[in-house]
Each structure stands twice: as C-alpha cells, then as structure tokens.
Amino acid sequence: MKKIFSLIVVIVLAITLVGCKKDSGDYITVGLEADYPPFNWYETSKNDYNHPIHGQRNAYVAGYDVEVAKFVAEKLGKELRIKMIAWDSLSPALTTGEIDLIIAGMSPTEERKLTIDFTNPYYTSNHVAVVLANGKYANITGLEGLRGSKGMGQKGTLYADLVDFVGENHGATVQPVADTVPLITTSILNGGTDFTIVEKPVALGMVAADSRLKIVLDVTENIFNVLDEDREISIGIRKEYELKEDINNILATITQELRNSWMDTAVERAGN
Image (cartoon, rainbow, N blue to C red):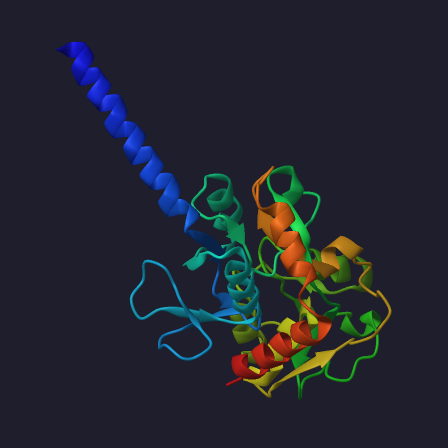
C-alpha cells in the first residue's frame, strides 16, 4: 500500500511539474521600475500603447522599454507579463527566477556581468547635463562651468558615477544620490540641486515634461570619459539563458528607423 501511495504521489508531482513547465513557457516576464521616462513610466489608465503591470489593478506601464518588450514577446510567440520592481531589486529578481528579462534602460557593465548576463544592445546614447533653464548654469559650454555647483545622481547607476566624476575633476559638490530621476528633477526645480547627468533620451523626457529644465553639455565629444559599454543599453538575462540567441536575433531585426520612432514617440508621450 505504501509503495502504491508513493507511486501515486510521484505521478501527481510529475503531472504538476509538467503543467507548471507548460504554463511558464506560454509567457515571458519582464521586470522594470516604471519610473524612468522615456524608457518606462507608470500610468493609471489603459490606452492603446501602454501595458498592464502584472499583479496590480489599474496599473500600466509605457515607454521605449515597453515597445521593445512587446516586440520581443511577440516574436517569441509568448504572452508578455511586466512586473514593476525597484531598480536595486531587478538583478536579484532575475537571478531568483521571479522575472525572465530586465528591460529597464540597463547598461551591461562589468560589475553587473558578475551576476547576470546581457543581450546585444537595443539602444545607444550619449550623456548630457540637465539644469534649470533660467538658472546660473543654463549657458555653460564645458564641465568647468559646473565648478561650485551641486550635483545629484541616481542611486545604483552610472549617472551617480558621472556626477562623482564632475565633483572630483571639476569642483562640483556631490550630493547624496536619489532613488529615481523624478526625485532628482524635483530637487533641481526646488533649487536644492543645480545639475544631474543622464542619458540624452532621459534628459529630453525631463525637459518635455517641464520647460523649466534645460539640457546643457550636449556635445559629440566624450567629455565624461564614458566607456562604450556604459553608453549601451541591453536586456538583462540569467547566465546561460536558453533564449539569448533567439532574443539577439530578434533585436537584430529592429531597424534604426523603428528604434528612432519608438524613442521619439516615448519622449513625446512622457512629456504629456
């Protein structure tokens, strides 16, 4: 009787595991912070371009990353699920299997590669500074113009490192980091911070959302000494992820025209 019972348990477990495996293969789960326009941002009502946030009512996310996620999921033939996860928790969520992909404006730095892997880049951009449009630093033409200013970067990102770079090399005062770009924006508008450094699409979104802000130091030269890998944005994946090659092949089919269209539209929508 005990052997028969054990056999039944094994059969039930096998059926359950097969069922779980089948279900998990039907969808792909993407993690992002939903607070990083124009790459991704939170919305409270459904429209024709955003996507529901999994597990939350009346919660949606839109932006460039969402368009990439939709495209990848469609080409993989999977249902897309998007989870809103704090920036510092994205990599742990990936390694534990809570999510399958990070599509959140993340650069494939060597430090991050110690714990997760990355696809080929899906976007490349330059870095610029953002200041008050009518402020003391609105007309600077070089990093020396930020001497004596107060700079704030985003926690856990290259932006914080670049503000540190300006502080160490050009006499700026480095303030404690903020968790999100919108918090930095508020500090600049309130006069508590003079500048931040972000990728140009993010800066465009900030200025589109509030005309009191201005982009400066928008030059072709690499004035912040940023590595190529830090200018690139890739999809975060688990080590030895079985779909890496498929996703890279999908990303290769996205034309530059389509990438530009997604970003231009995201910047416009983020400013509304």
